[in-house]
Length: 87
Image (cartoon, rainbow, N blue to C red; front, side, top):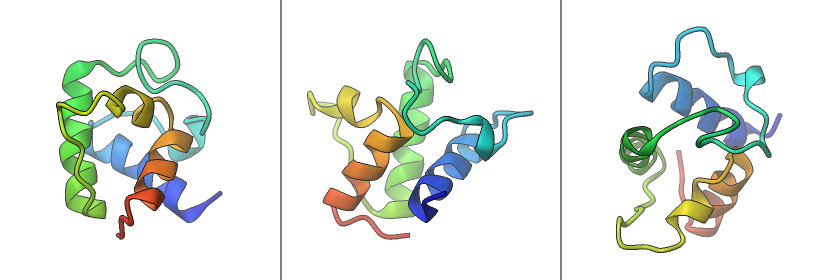
């Protein structure tokens, strides 16, 4: 498993307190919201803050691409890499 994707999965689990979910339970390409992992808009806000703290990348509420960036673990990893995020 890609190290960045593993870090993202662990961040999702820990920051959103997803009891009973393990990193290997989250499929990289599956949606994080609604179907798939089933996250909601409050989860998106919490996850955005956690991503900013851990990786140093900023996600603006006004950015129309946020939905695309949060689509899956794959999408988040691509965005963090492109934005030069570090852990």
